[in-house]
Image 1 (cartoon, rainbow, N blue to C red):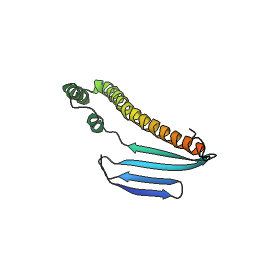
Image 2 (cartoon, rainbow, N blue to C red):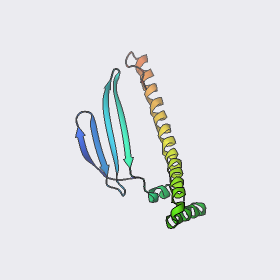
Image 3 (cartoon, one colour):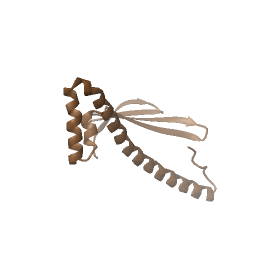
Image 4 (tube, helix red, strand yellow):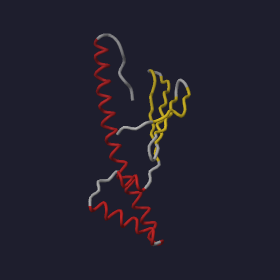
Length: 132
């Protein structure tokens, strides 16, 4: 997905924060911390998760359309609203698992690449193993 973002905050040399020009916008915060073996880079992404955004993550099947209609009908019945909140919470958890798995695969790939590069460096007399 292609998007534009603007840097909204820099605290040199350890923090860079940007905000996307999307609807809804999301914030990406990158922090670099010194540690005994070098530095740790942490990236945190934040977005306000609306019901529409949750729905957009799911394939538009007839089951999903039926689910959306049921959840939306809870607004009309005050006694059923807590159930609607619980269903949205479950949907949010289900949607969050997918990117978490994709992120873990991406991080595992980076780890393998860095370990291979580190092993090559050790064979050539340079470098240390990358630590968690």
